[in-house]
Every structure is written in structure tokens, then in C-alpha cells.
Image 1 (tube, one colour):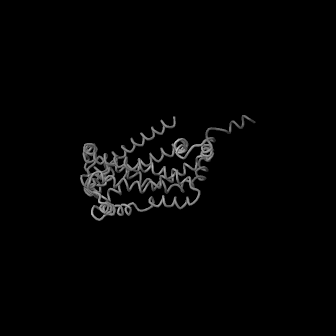
Image 2 (spheres, rainbow, N blue to C red):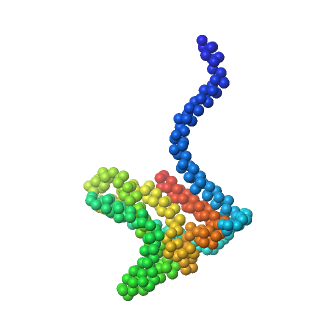
Image 3 (spheres, one colour):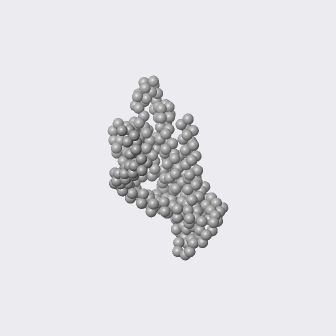
Length: 312
């Protein structure tokens, strides 16, 4: 009997069984594949294809209408040797430092204070999140009127107090502070809510034990809250770093495409927009975008190494 079973179990029969099983599995999972297919189609059309085309375009000279001219690595050479792009990189990192450090510190303090409240937390959370969902262009226009040199509210207040006015939209460092203040105003509440979510995951027994031992609020903040909140802090630092390096709308609305006086408000992404869509140097602009990508990649890798070093 066993020999008869072995004789019927030939390689051909095994192959047929596998084919039948695979076909039945395909029919079983076909609805699932069809349900996720739109995402991959949209990703292919609107993400992957433009990305690959921008890589191809970065090796060509093109004004958007005429024929493309292959230039090799000339676009990348011009990007890396252009002093204006170097200034844009420097401006971006300066604005990032001026905005990110105060923003994350204020967000952490606000989250810690809000977490101590027992009532009206939702109202405060709503107020914190409103700047983040407000139109960036509208926010920039409002801040532009506040920073106006002659009739702006800030300079008018300084004049009433007999203090020297500040050329917020003309001088180098005031221009950077104007952008940094907008970033701080918009993102402090969002990061505060992220920190608050991390604070709520800390067991209350730690705080109660510290209170029993006589620790005050400052001791609790630095010895309990900060160490346990470190992963959340690292997340906000990384996300704020990526967002800060991609700063565009605020300087574009305040200072136009060239970054204002002396290009002091010019950021990396604004420089890419200026070259691509204002000057119609699409090949050069594509090369700028890839250089920015590698700068962000290096910066993200550095933050990732910091995370690894902290977890050891």
C-alpha cells in the first residue's frame, strides 16, 4: 500500500498541487491587494516618478519648455560653489538654532505646567494647537504687519516707550529673528502637546514618592521628568530639525523669492524655489533639491547616532 502511495506522489503531481494552492491563495488575497493598490498607484504617479525625473533632470539644463541639454555634474558643481547657496545654508542653520532651542524649551516648560493642572486641560490643549492648524501664509501676513518698519505694532510700541525702532524686514539679524519668532509661535504648542503625552506616560508613583521625600518642583523636573522624557525629547529634536531645514513659506512671504536685503532671509528650500520656479532653471533647481536632500540625510543620521549614544 505504501509503495502505491509513493508511486502516485510524483514530481508532476507535487507541482500541480503547488500551482493549485498558489492560485487559491491569489484569489483569496486579491481583494486585499486591490484595496491597497490605489495607494501604490498614487505613490508611483505623484512621488516616485517625480523623484526619479528630478534626478534625471539634475543632470540636464532645461527651462521648462525647450529641449533638455545634458550637462553632467555641472549643475552640482555650480550649486556647491555658489556663494549664495552657501549663504542660504548658513541662514537656514542660524534660523534653526534661534528657533528650535527656545521653542523646545518653552514647549517642555508649558507641558510640565499644564500636566500639573487638574481642570481646564482641554481648553489649554486647544489653544496650544490652534497656531499649528492656522494657515502659514495668514500667520506670516499678520507677523509681517507686526514687523512693519513704520506702522508696525512692535516698532510703534518701541517708539511710544522712547526706544530705538528695529528694521525687522531690512537688517540681517532682525530678519532672522522675525522668521524664528514665527516658527516659535507656530510650533511651541504642538511640541508641548507631544511632551504632555510623554509626561502622562510617566507613572504618578514616581512623583508621589518624590513629594514624600521632600523634593520640590525643580528637583522633580530635572531628576524625574527630564530623564524619563528623553526619548520624546529626541523625537521632537529630530522632527524639528527636519522641519527647520525645510523652512520655506515664512521667508518667502516676508522677503520674496531672493530672501530680502542681502539674501539674509534666504533659506535652502527658498533658494531651490527661486532657481526653479522664479528663474526657470529647472535642471539647476533639481540639483539643488538633491543637495538639500543629502544635507538633511546627513543631519538626520547625526541625530540618529545621538539617539543610539543616549540609549547605551
